[in-house]
Amino acid sequence: MHKKWNLVLLKQHKDDEGRIICVEAKINRVKVNLCNVYAPNKEEPEFYHKVNKMLGEIEGGLYIIAGDHNQVQDGILDKTTPSTHVPRDRKAIHLMMKDLDLVDIWRLTNPREKEFTFYSHNHKSFSRIDYFLLSNALTDGVTECTIGPIIISDHAAVHLCMTIGTDVVKKSRWRLNTSLLHDQVFANSIEEDLKRFFEVNVGSVERMGTVWEASKAFIRGKIIAYSSKKKRKYREKLLKLEAQLKEKEMDLVENLTEILLKKVEYALFRLNSNFYESGDKAGKLLARQLQQKV
Image (cartoon, rainbow, N blue to C red; front, side, top):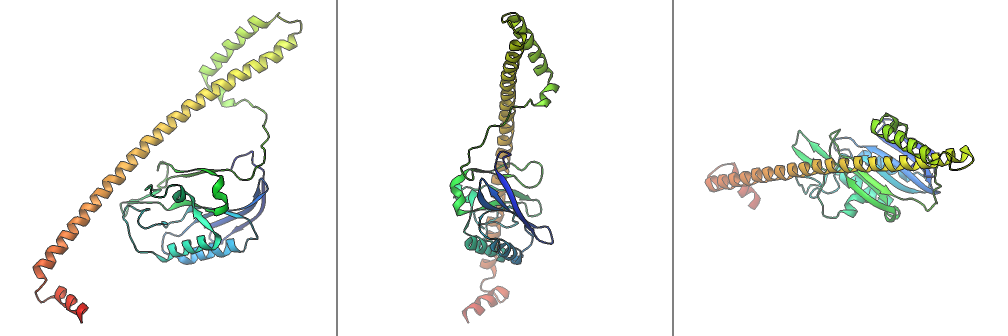
């Protein structure tokens, strides 16, 4: 959270296994219940029934739930291996969303897009199992929700930017970023700027204190300009690298999907061939066909 937000922690809830951590808080005088979950990687609907019960017992407030849900919202859109089967834990998530009036904010802002947050090496497939669930009343304050590239871990980060409440944030005092002192280019530039400033301004006024105060304002402006330029270049480089990584990731998804489709086509071809070759012969295939007609 932004350090300038008016945040008041009220109460904390957690389960014995450490898979659910919820915090009741007031952010800019708005009651918000923040919940982080790490769902089991097997079908356990009881886990979401527990989350639903825990949040339902909290008195008032809006909800922000995030984490590794280990289950997709949509078996078609959120996986590279689509399935129409709806497992019980997905039903439990949808029931919780209905009970607490929650929405999958990324899917709300990207209705038909296919992006993924996890790659399974065992199944050779991508899926979107990391997402934010928000109270409907908070959706108007959302300015951005994006999925980053899979870099450090086997999961991608999901970024959510939003505003809560309407408090006017007071401007904090400016402080020097001391890490700049290790930047030799910065140090040389500031030294030259200060020399030129004092050469021009010393003797221009009666009080040396006035020159000193002016020098502080002058050098602060130089530091802010240098910091902004350096931060902008760093940000541009980071965005460029993330975009390249995302592009490679999407190429991998497309190639994987193409390979899987070819495997399915070949499997269907073999199935049709077997059916044609043994369709009218005595055997298991004929027995199953006759059994369906009885």
